[in-house]
Image (cartoon, rainbow, N blue to C red; front, side):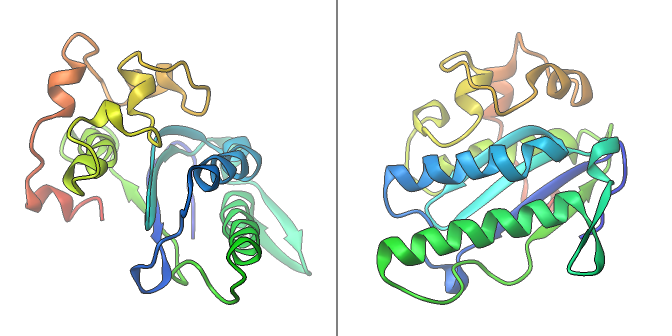
Length: 195
């Protein structure tokens, strides 16, 4: 994964063979704790959603995102290394919990750059991430899904994982029409640019 300063990225991965990665509510919370430890220090998180078998983050890269450090004699990007550590430590915990071994996630986590200022990409990605639980028929309303930043944006929770001010500014979110905009249908052609 390569990151550049002052860019938006859609980061996502799913369970190996599309298997579950979250088995009980505590797993979601533990994963978010690991996100705070391994991802949040290196970028600004604008949106997130954890699904039973995959996850999504929309992040904004800053100067600290493109920093590197030496790991095992090799220079590595801090955010890419943070993602690796997040998935590795989470996998170890789930394998211990479930008495299993092996990979939990698909091998390559995606970090797709999103063109800033293009309504078709930056806001589409933001709303797509939040719409996941409804599209999967896990809930009928986005605000009913506990494991997404949508609750923070619509005022139902005061979370601290996302940088709402930055998201509103960068994505030109209209908070007066936020709820209605969030439920607009995203066309399949638009998804090609964010997945």
